[in-house]
Amino acid sequence: MQAEASPVADDSNPQQRLSRRMLRNETLLVLALSLGASGVSALISFIGSVTKPGGLKDQAATMNASAAPGRPWLDLAWQLFGITTALVPVVLVAHFLLREGAGLRTIGFDRTRPWPDLGRGAAIAAVIGSTGIAFYLAARGLGFNLTVVPEALPEVWWKYPVLILSAIQNAVLEEVIVVGYLLRRLGQLGWTPTAALVGSSVLRGSYHLYQGIGGFIGNMVMGVVFVYLYRRWGRVGPLVVAHSLLDIGAFVGYALLAGKVGWLPTA
Figure 1 (cartoon, one colour):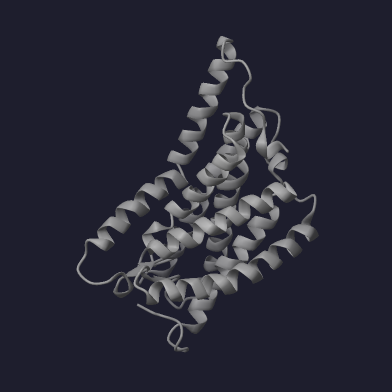
Figure 2: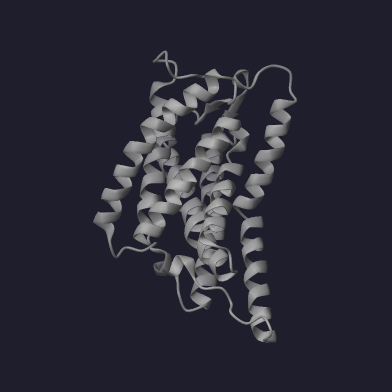
């Protein structure tokens, strides 16, 4: 499978050594511009949370907050700017894959199988969504997690479209880079399938560490499942669909239910 490409075979060849070095540096740069940097940021945030007086569940991790309170049109501009620029690393990955004669189609991010991708993605979201909520509530109750506030946008006309776009952006960025691209590059760099699975899953958990230990563990487990399904199907398409539906459910669901149901924690 292309996601587990063969490593460079002969390090005695200077050109092959250069190619291996270029692939390694390219991968590090992509991660430094995207989710690797997010992992470091989340770690710093987590350290700040655990060293702050009080328990983790008494603190909040807010997502999708207003960027310009009281100025809705400026706020909308900032929201769209943030969503758009967050996808630049995906465009960079597409460029690198095209440079080697592959493209995003080689990791299954295309429109060749829309209905199977949608069906599989919806099934994954249904299973992970229910277990994910239960795990979050349990982790928070045990004091391992902050109170996650999925959205804190003002009540304006663009609120729900922006939340949906933000969810899709998260899904595309994470699944293309952390699963499709990273597994391909780690395989080319000689990582074993098990080591690549661990690397991808730990990275996914790391940039959710700002939510607490529960966020780290839950997303790492999700990463293992997603890597397994990617290797089975050879496509990130279903994973993007599943992740989009999960985040849409979290963002929009919170906006609709916060303060109206007793089981949903709020800040």
